[in-house]
Image 1 (tube, rainbow, N blue to C red):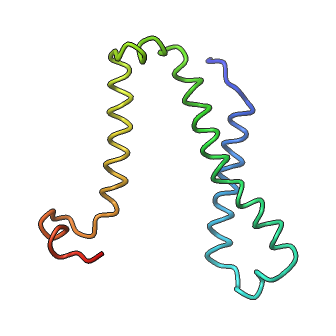
Image 2: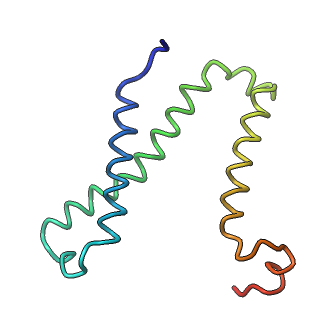
Image 3: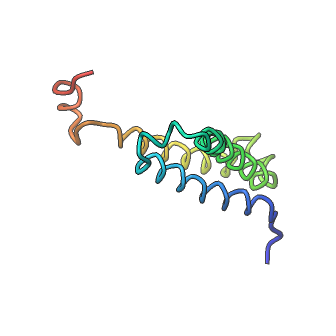
Length: 112
């Protein structure tokens, strides 16, 4: 079994649970309830979720890539594999924002 950093797993788990709570509350909470006193505390905690996700993602990347650091620095196979994974996520993310499946329609039929 690999050595795991339990606090990282716990932070990822809690961030996931609170992220679900954020989306559920934002979708279903009655507008009048947002004026209540407890909502300010909840809104503050909800504001910490995205930075927690980014922090733990960066931390996990550093820990996981520590053993491949020299290969990354010398633009070895691991570097290109990691770069291709990042580019794939980037392309899928931007592709999801395209208004049409057709490049021609996206260029000529879409509006700003």
